Image (cartoon, rainbow, N blue to C red; front, side, top):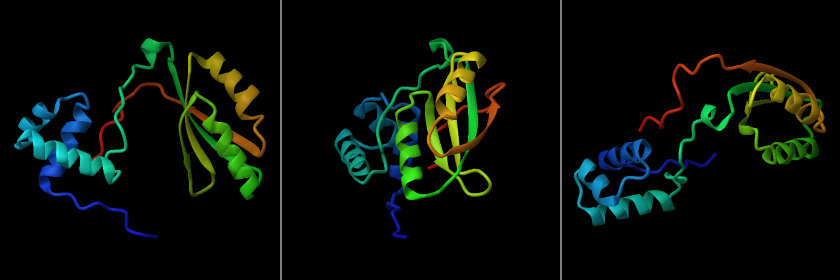
Length: 157
C-alpha cells in the first residue's frame, strides 16, 4: 500500500484546525488566527485542497430540527462476498439518502451503516421494505442512538 500521507508543518496543522472549526472563515480571518498574511495562507489552503488533505467544505445540519429524530447504526451481513454482490450493495446504499455513511468492516459484520429516519416507524419501513430486500443482504442488526454524548468533531491535527 502506497503512503498517501502529506507532509504538514505546524502552521498547516493550525490552519487545518481553524478550517475544521469554522469552514466559512475568510482568508483574512484564518490568516490572522494562524499568524500568516493572507496570500501565504491562501497558498497553503490551495495546496492542501489540491493534495486532497482538505476534501471539501460542508455545513453541519441539525437532524432533529429537520425532523430526522432517529439515528441507527446498522450492522449488515451479506450472503455472498462475490464482486457482483458487493458492487450491487455499494451501488444500492449509495442511492439511499437515509444512509449517511457506510463502512466495510472486519469481524463478524460485513458493513456498518449510519442511518437516519423521522422515527422508529419510518426506520422500520426503511429496514423491512428497502434494506432487507437488497440483493445479497443476509442479515441486519440495528442499534439506536439514545443520546449524543460527543458529536462528530474534526480530525486531530
